[in-house]
Length: 165
Image (cartoon, rainbow, N blue to C red; front, side, top):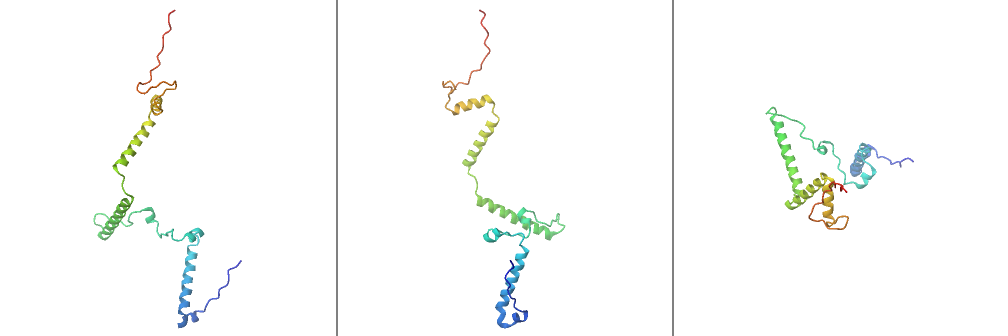
């Protein structure tokens, strides 16, 4: 199906005084059509519907957090060095603002996290015997036979000599 034909006004007619508003509308529509053609491949229908949630950036530098493009060292180009310092200061200010917005971790929260980390790492390097002892403590100190074994470590099984009968 073809698009509906929209008649265009002639250039001379648009130049007349009483047609100024119409001329502005036509120019705006032309620029919108050109913009749509330019970004047609990059912008999907869902992006058009959602609208304000997407930001188009002409350069990938800010997305990748790249450093200032031109460089100068040891006074070779003082103007560039001044620009580099300004860019570095701006980046540091942005970083400090982000840190302030996120907030910091309290000492108690850090201690809790450290304790759980130590416990987790300790479990990783336990031997089978140590695991069984910790499981018994965790499950109320009961052996499988039903007797309590809270404070005494498990006895080692020793070789029993046969009787000389």
